[in-house]
Image (cartoon, rainbow, N blue to C red; front, side, top):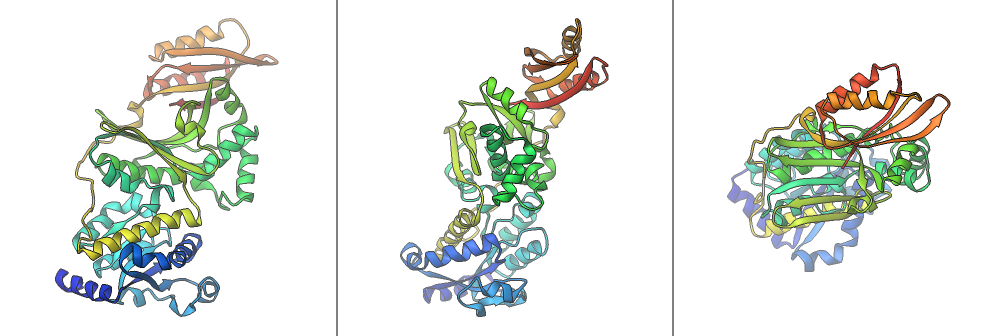
Length: 442
């Protein structure tokens, strides 16, 4: 790899030619977007950066298929070593996704003295520490703005613009597919299955939508955001996760009656008892700014002790929005290269805060259940809640179907463990025919 001085000298020699060589790993949806943005920015790079950027190599699996996407097929390769061993390449952009071989390629690129920009949330949420340590050891930039909310800037603001704050809460809508589905269920009274089918038809949902609708995609993003916001390592495995598959049009209607919307929210809180991280559907007051974030848009709401409340809003995914964030990171790397200060902002996780168990988290709940329509049922339900230290804010009988009545309970703030204990008892009672929905309230 050479000494830091020899690397800097080689970099300066490349920059004297007013051109920096970049390699792109992957030419799928996001990779194609990056290529397009580079092409669109060709005439802007020199006045913006003082140098030109050139994608000199693109790693692909299928050379023939990829040739139709670029103007010069000679830059395509299916051999990683052609990039790893090319000393003229200073920046590697990884948009392959997945754990391997992306992890190996990123580590090898950093160790060989190359800066890396990635959008790989899966990898960062699980192995962020390893990657950041490798970047620090090599003195290179490892940037990943696009890994969390597509075109919305949130990583850089948390690391730089809001660095003078103690962040206590970050809450956001960070998955466009689920937000599109819930929007259609809210605005057009669709059931979940119909809204998912529409999302798939329009290209918002993948052929296998599991990662989106089960909350896994959002959980990875929340792990990354929490790590940066609270300066303490949070991984994907730390995030309690629920999806939206159990949400019904009836739940949406009840939420509307209560002046609320239902959103899949990623929650990260820094409390005295430790860091809380979770992803799950929540009722949120319609007056809250996040309630009006619809369709495939994303938004992240941040509370800091100095700045107060701020919100970042925009396209959370897609070819060009994600490419916008990636190219913005590349420009940052180039500016750092010009002044020999790559790696100046490395890992910011200098604390080791405890993770709070989900059983200890305090929340409010919306619960909908089907019960026998006879005297004494409400009193029995109320007694179960009271015996388990669950205070009720509202208790409403909504409708009747034959011999069954549907009741809705809204609790005060309650410790999750106590609420779950009450639910377990209710599920054993003959008079309770079904617990149809349990949704947290923000």
